[in-house]
Image (cartoon, rainbow, N blue to C red; front, side, top):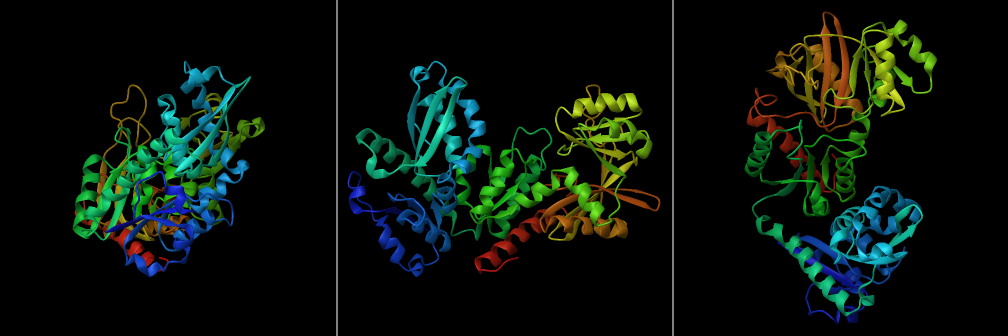
Length: 497
């Protein structure tokens, strides 16, 4: 079962609404014992007037987090909204949407206005998408958003927490409807809570061209999760505000730093969920410059690599002499063979680097090390769990061929039992993955005779039906889910994995 607390600073703050046993004062919440929860899942909606640092609202959210309750707003949100220099970072992308959203709206001719958001909802339909994104950035029952217009156009002038006692009658109706919708969301999941030990969200994008897991593999995670006592639910980008409903987050969408997948990982981690991919692993794996430096520092084998700088023409003119032609150019955050180009001479190098430098001020130049296939070793919690050979795409030098006239988009594969993969390949893969962390990784390596080289480490490696699971079948999905369970059990007992 689940428990909901709606905290107000004064009883009269709730006088306009129906009486509810869920409503308690800040003092009552602060003074009550955590034992009253009886192991129930608890959601707290903090409606205190004073949300300032060391105020009633701040302490209610602070104690809620200490007690393991899911609270809105969180201490993090309260802290971020207290400093414009911090929350402005999250508003940069939203400013761009504002002028477009207001086009043709009566407010478009005004110099400014203030919008009240109720659990991410607004009565101005044109601004609903913006309201949702603001709520995802700063989950709060009430947000006051100040919009201002200057010669450059519309921008968000400020964001602060609202107060329930300052709402007028029409706003009270909007707030009541939004609260009803939000609290019903809170109550949706507990009906199956008795049946499952934990609830896990899998973030995916049904429209992604090259997802880390195909639809059949995702269904396997759901099916085997039920067998193991985990209620696994597939979620999408639009479900950002629902993260607090879950105990764990598994990201099965291609990650990037300037992407919602990283925001999901950060938010989930801050709310106490067990997360794969965790934010640190995303940071470390999605940038090849970091990985190249890490491997070099630990003296692990990799193709000869140089970092090219946009403003260093002399370096570009001589890198071919040092690495030899052909060589490979990579943007630091490319994935699935995108942002990677092979050049055979200086002219091609100049042309390719000019194109790629439009996307990044740094590039990686790497010796061309061709093999018929790459090894992919899956590593989970510092142990190998699968081994695949990914063959180059037909008539191409990469696994994925994105060219317009490609015969096939990707090459063939061969999955082998871990014990049948070369011991030295598996050992190097595990050593490399352990430098990143203790999550789930896919280490790509090349082997030619006595020589081995690490190509990259993926923070959300493919687990596709009929490929990576070809040897272990359902046991591969169970291994991943059992690691989530292990961490959740330790977390429940107050221990760190």
